[in-house]
Image (cartoon, rainbow, N blue to C red; front, side, top):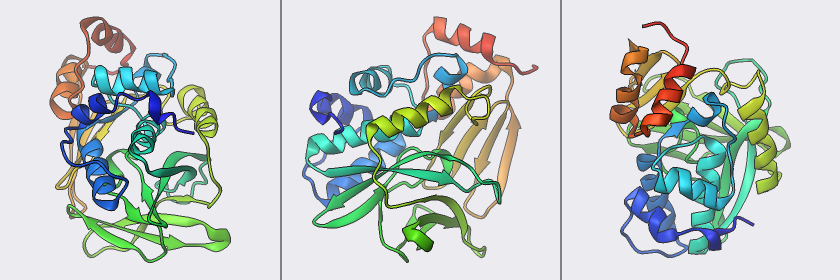
Length: 273
C-alpha cells in the first residue's frame, strides 16, 4: 500500500538522525516519529513556485531526504508511512478536517496515519506544522499526553469521529482537527493534495508557509510574519523581508535552497521590504 520497499531506508534514517534499533514496536514508532518531526520542516515552497507536488516514494525521497527539503502533510505522512511500512508496521491513512479556524467548516484536507502495534492503534502525524504532535498518541478517547511542554488529548464525538485537541496551561482544550474511522489510501491523499496545491481557496496557494514544532517553542513563517509560539500562550512576532527570507529559511528551518531556486522563490515572494 505505501511502497515501503521502494524507500532507501538507510538514507531516510540518516536524514532524521535516527541510529537506534528497528522493530515494529512502540519504542521504534515513538523514536522515529520524534526524529522525523525534529529533522524535516513543514513547508509549501513548491506550491508557491507553481511546481507539482509528487507523492510517490522516489519523489519524496529525492525532495525531503536527499535534497533535505521539507513538505506539507501529504508529503510528510506519505514518507513516514513508507518508512514505517518498510520497518514492518501496519499503517493506514485517515482524512482529517482542520478545526483551528473557529466555527468555519473546513473541507477534509489533512492527511494523518493510524499505526497498529500489538493490536492497539496509535495516531501518528508528522505533518500538521507548528501545532502538530511530536510523538504518536494512543488512539482512544480520553488519551492525553504531555509532549515537551505541549498538552494533547483525544476526544470522541458522534459517528465515531475522533478529535485531536491541545491546550495551554490554565486554558480550555481547543480542537486541532477531527477525523472519522474511514480508511484513506494513497490515492485519496493524491486527490486532497491536488486541491491543497492548486485550488485558489487553499491555505497553501499564494502565500509562503514554513513551520517547525518543538518541545519548548513552535516556529512559523506565514508569508511576511515570523511567529514564535510559547507554551504559556504568548507569541513573539517579527516582520520578514524579501532580503532576509532566504537566510531565515536556512537559519530557522534548515531549508537551504540552490541559488536558482532561491532566485525563483524571491521572484514569487510578494512582500515589501
